[in-house]
Image (cartoon, rainbow, N blue to C red):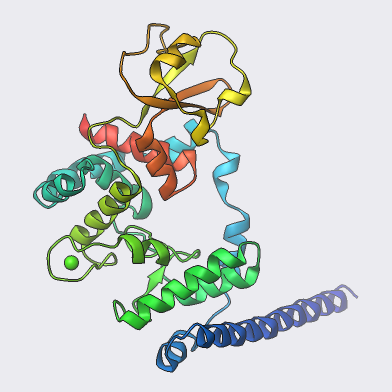
Length: 319
Ligand SMILES: [Ca+2]
């Protein structure tokens, strides 16, 4: 009896899977038609859409992103173990001569570049082994952010059509983030840069290109040379919730925050500086004043946990 129920269940499950596969196959055909309408060459379309796989694991990863369930301290303890800090310091020294000219050209500190590299791909070791076309087609088919992922798919086709990398080498994360800087295809097209002067921007294999691409991204979206990212602060009197957040209109000069009772964590006065800042409260009762550079990192990845990992690692390289 039990066995009968089980085999019925298995039959039902496999029917479900094949029905889904059939609908995915239809979706791939639809993408090919759209790609043709967008003017991609038949060669690119045939190359891109042969053997496209549905990645069930990508869909479940997307629905179970762990960040929401961890406090900031728990997250940072996991994201920045001591071995990673040690490695960041040692790689910063190893690549110092490569980093220096890139850092000067773009006005972004080498520590931030190395920290991004460490957080994004564990210094180039975990870049993802998914076929990017399959990953993007899967995420687009899944449907919650279809427009976003479909646009990334077209950008991926553009990269293939330009011949920057082959389909077989175009590997990335389950969400389609590529190479050691984990650039989505749109970021690759906008910011990939040649760091070693060989004429190619190889974010998959070449650390100098990874560094230059990361630096170009930050400098383009507004990194301000010579400024901090922000600082932890204390709030000495209750502040309205409407003052807290990262929206443009909530930016105020440091002095205005001081006048509202925002202090250093130990209660002393904020430094006197002519710098606009936002107040954020990533966890109840935990406040930070953040500057433009924090916003550029948030542009890279819209997660406060991500930004705190990057600046936390960068600060520990410097020490
Ligand atoms: Ca290069």
